[in-house]
Length: 337
Image (cartoon, rainbow, N blue to C red; front, side):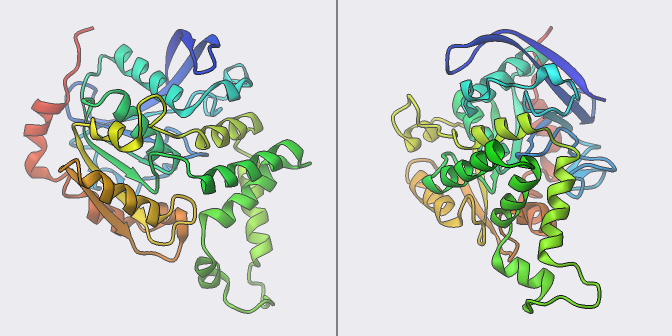
């Protein structure tokens, strides 16, 4: 069930003050009875992380890596992502916001829910970048953070891709569909396309072509995602930077007290493996409780949604049954309301 939180008089990075509404869903154990796992969605994702149509149902569910019998799973919708279907909640002034603003909004929502500690936060792509912002904003909030296919900064490469997306969204006759087609070429890899469609330029015998596949994904997103939401999320992706006002990235990240578990992808063409490894190596020189795992895949950035067995093998030790009772007592405090 989609639930709502109203945040009044929120002042964003640009100084604009407005009332905002966050929506969220809770899965698994009742809030306050089990360790809390916060799941941040990706650019066109939402709070439906599990269940029949859940975008991460292979990882989150009964007897899955994040077992709903043992954990309370909390997932917010990014304000303005349109998942609540209310047009008035779209953020038309989206350029007034940056990703840190979203982290601050989530922080306020957690306060309203009475949550002061979270066992683990996990998020993919922009959801992982948001997780970095949250952890730096409140260094003691998480026992574990698990940024997947993400980084604590938007590189020039990421910003360049966002700029191309912005141009398509502002100038195309079919902006959402066309932007999605371009995005799919970033989210996958050349090897992934060869694996899916073969090496021949000519497709016969009724096989789907790469052109048809891209058009399918474009139309599919066009049917469920609004232009204003896409513009907002694309803009936010370009604004990730935990160093703003805090000196540098390493100084900011070193303040995080919880364990950091980076999951990167060897073929990621957006948040590259090389950038993630640099983050790990540099941060590990000043922070002990950090690790990195690499998904080996031909499927590019989207591999974190495809290579479920590898993701599970990396996170299972964090969520294993032996520690659940102790972690419940230690890391899931709920403030009295």
